Structure formats: C-alpha cells, structure tokens
Length: 289
Image (tube, rainbow, N blue to C red; front, top):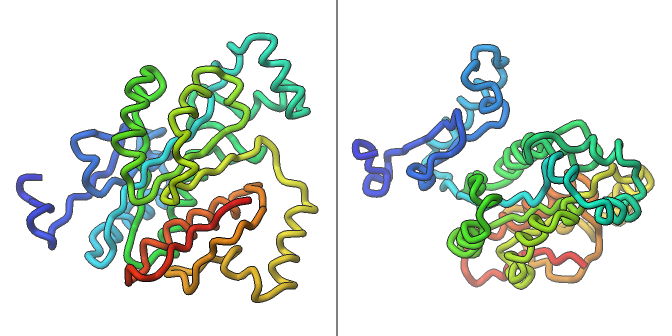
C-alpha cells in the first residue's frame, strides 16, 4: 500500500483478492471476494478455469480508471440451520403455520452457515446469488463498479458491534442493501438485529428486499412477463430501469420481490442514480408499494 499510494496517485490501484474472509486493514481498497474460491481455500487447485478467468476479469475491471470502485454495505439477515433447530416449540409452530410448509422442506433451505441459505426454494445459495447479482448490476453501470461490504462475525455475536456497523458504515454509504429472510425473523436474536435498521425505511439510499423461502407461482411470473410485453412502453422504467435514468420513477408501484429478477431490477434502479451526471436530475428511487 505504501508503494502504490492509491489515495495520492490516482493512476495506481490496490486490488485485494480475498482467499479467506476480508481484512479490515484493506477494506478501503478494491476487493474481490468469491464464495467459490473461499470455500475451496486452501485447496484452490481444483477450481475450474472459469473461476480464475472470472477473477482475472474482475482484476482488469478494477484497473479501469474510468470506473470508480463503490463499496456497498450489505447485511443478509438470515439464519443457520442450528439457529432454526434451537427455536422453541411455540416459535417453530408459528413458523410452520405461517408458511404452510412441512418442517423437512423448510429446514432443507438452510445449512451450517448463513452464506448457504437457499431463498426462492432454489438450488443456489445466497452467496452465489449475490455474486451473480453484483456482476449483473456492474454490467449495467457506467462509471461505478460496486462490491459488497459485509460485516464480520461479530455482527452476530455482539449486538453492540452490530449496532456500530449499522451506524458507522451502513447509514453513511452512498448505497446500501438489506436482505431479509422472513423465516429467520422467528429467531429472537436475528429479529433484534432487524430492529437496528428501523430508520432505513426513510432512507432512499437503502434498498430493502425480503426474499421468500419458496419459488414464485408460474402464474405470477407469466403475469409479470405479460404486463411488461403487452403494455410497452408504460412499464419500461420500472421493469428495466436505465442507467443513468431518463426520468424519475417515484410513483407507488406495488409488486412483490418474488425472484432474482426483481432483486436485480431494484438494485439497478438504486445504483443507477449514482450515474446521473448532473445534480439537478431527480432521484430515480423506485418505491415499493
């Protein structure tokens, strides 16, 4: 870092490839954190060539002086399998009654770590979904290249540390994201951490998404597709937000976050406002009814 002097010399870069966790000492620099690489470490020789090619591509993008790195605080409020297994009988009964799912089906979506939570009743864990969403959003952005900044394990073991992360990093970011697992809210400790974000609903820099534990009905997916295609161009700015936005979208527009496409749309709409060239253009924040 002392050689590169990236804060003094704008032509130099420090790009950090994280093989284990994220170092607090380097969090101010360009970070590359891939779940597949970290899961394989230290036996990384078995990773497919595509994984290394993706890292090479990210390093090249990080060296692009025309794209400013943007660290986006991200908190995924979900549970481990152990968290749910330790629920009281009363809370477990509430959970099963509310979601109308048998215990085996519901618990099958969880593993030993929070990164292995499977939303939407799908095969992909949340860590992989977030990696792919980050790449898709970056493909849509022009002058920014975002990367997730997630809290360390103290967020879950120390409520004071969790509050400090929210106050010092989350609420001060140019863009921040909260991902909520509704099932995890039956755990009192996770619900307590949700309460740390109670002011976020009034902050247009923060995107909040609650991901269901089951796949959306095909009828709703077909309805969304028909609504977009048969009403062109009315919903263009809602379903396919442009970067930078050409007009503000502030109307209350009710549509549930039911799959990855909805999450991608919300993130592009939120990040897109950062690409507005002039400050006199209104925010394109999309409000969910």
